[in-house]
Length: 138
Image 1 (cartoon, rainbow, N blue to C red):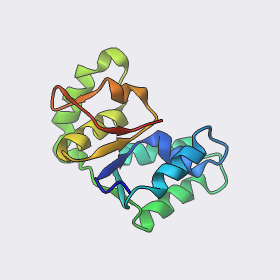
Image 2 (cartoon, rainbow, N blue to C red):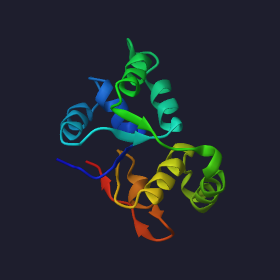
Image 3 (cartoon, rainbow, N blue to C red):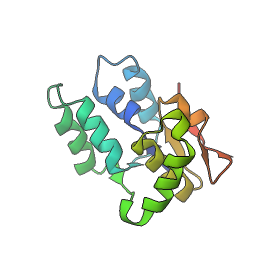
């Protein structure tokens, strides 16, 4: 069981809730081995809700995970805007998303965390200007 703080990205969240997703079984298996709650930011919730909007109860399922305390929104954009802006500027050459910048910043704030993602850019991104971000990735 993974006991470190886990920061969930959009891909695994969508895969977990969408049974037709290529990574659905992988996401279910991984989440069964993670100590809850997992942590994220509103940008990830927004992306996941958008991607699941056409699925029956897709958005409701995302909100239910938050209501049940399985997902905690633990990122405060008000206090992190400068750090997020710097990350977006640093990685503009690989078209970093706003959500990815927020997740990188969350990983910097939580030094013993792992990022649960499907995004291969997390093999490129670094936290604290040079440290590898530990990931849970297929």
